[in-house]
Image (cartoon, rainbow, N blue to C red; front, side, top):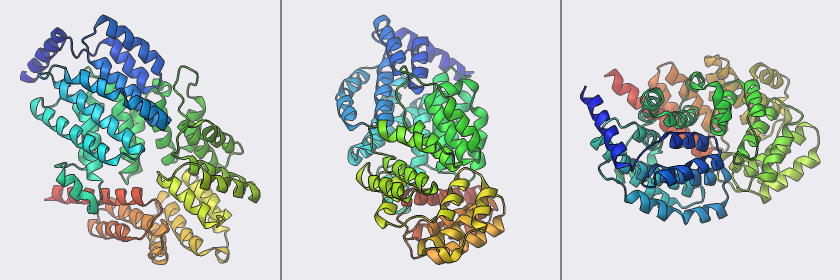
Length: 496
């Protein structure tokens, strides 16, 4: 009863102050923003400002548009231009009602969004400072207003990120008095997803669903949890480009590649949507995994139109692979030259593309085809390709890649003992190499043992993963191994 009385009084306070009014226009604008319909959102926010100039929710939403414009477009000139607007947004928020739960929440959201934008352009120190500010603001707000749902979106992603920090960097989080775990982050976001619409925060549902899609795919070993999220998606989400991206990734990584392609070919397009060329990149990947003849067209659309640098090297690598599969070695070399010339190596995929380009080593066709089919969830086809391959033709790298790929296929097909056998072989052959095969084999073996509740062996494998000298996919593999060790710690505590 007291809780509902507090909510009633809060509602009256917000309505009378007029400073934080999530009006129907703001709710609709928020939906347009996450759909990347920025112009439509801008029209609604302009009307809201004219009618209710003291309302600060439009300030946060305008900043949200700036944030997504930077993250989606990755244009550094746009980043520099929009950064000039940040002080004015911050000034307006500072003038808000300090007794409202929205006061700290909106300031935290702005800090968090700009921190993620800065990380993309290498401004690490400022980003770290803004992340800490956001964390402290949200923690303080939860003490003052326990259960205030909008806080939990930011806290969810912050707890998960802190929980996945590798051991050798955890001192930084501790120094900043930041604590959390992946599981704690997941629980916060699921709480938002389950409560948002029923408690009058419909706009939080899309954000929580998008962030959970990221967490379940990247920081959880059991892809069934990501697949379970599909039940939360609705038919009208196909008009929300951010959710199309998130759902397509889930489908692709849970052996529903054909469904992902259908979704990616049918999402709405037009001048009223802000260009999201990552969807072309994703469509190219899904089609290449199915060995489609037109996969190259989507990578070309991405490389031609995208103004940023992330995924550019990987896109040219995938174009090179496409032509290698077509038997055109000259075009393979042409595109691998572009890998060296364009884009940056910010992502693990771009780093791996650059490594291949610098090595001058042409991928083994059997292993390449098996990898693509595996990534698309076509496991039996991938296995049949490997069964026809000649191990005597393998390079030193491929001799490690072969048992690794056999292990991944057996793992995906539920043949866990066979998967461990192949993973152990990959670890033995690659334990002193910089290739990613041995480290990821240790990670995947740890995931299997964890699922079997053999926590002792799981810990051995996760720690072995972190000790591997891999340079390929190092960031993501180590992050997942760190998250695995944190999960084991939480599970052991729960047993006692």
